[in-house]
Image (tube, rainbow, N blue to C red):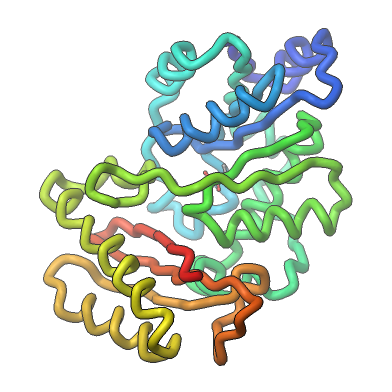
Length: 281
Ligand code: PAF
């Protein structure tokens, strides 16, 4: 594993590599967990060299408070990646290195994919994600880039981004990795107390039950059922439940046999916001 903190250092590591079709990118904001490591392992399996970027991207946070609280553990992350493979180049630039002129997002036309769910509750979030991912894809030029399905909306938006901007890269979605109790792995989980982290099994259990109801009930009935479960719960506050078409992310009105649907939730545990989703069919 090697570490590059500047674009120049990154280029020094990348230029001697005759990657052909075999350079992978795993973009992260650090505070790595088993979910990230599963992406890195897949990327290592499929590529000769893998760049793992560690960059807490300021333009995708809607509040400075949320940005400040985001866990950072670069030393620990590097130690972890050292154990994974010597094919890895860690790219951990500073904010100035990436946003040399102005810390601001580009504005994209994501066809409404960014106006629902996370986009509705986190204004400008996906323009920030798009800006940094476009910057990294342009700089690193990987053949494949890997993203987790926990952020399913992000994954669809990044697929849209590369189509819009004509970036020649394959975007690969990878399954959600869960803690033993079912809680979707997230860097934010580190901020949960032990009790709440255990109780958070409730989120995935509720989604699993929603899935079992999908064959029999309408999307509206299922959403109302999920809302009722959260209303009764003493810890978790539901921000939204949406049952949506996976490709348009539009809420399902009438289910169609040839379409795929997912249920998406955002949940607060005290001031910590968690998201999760499940394939329904
Ligand atoms: O999913 C994340 O951690 C971030 O949104 C990403 C894709 C690394 C962009 O900053």
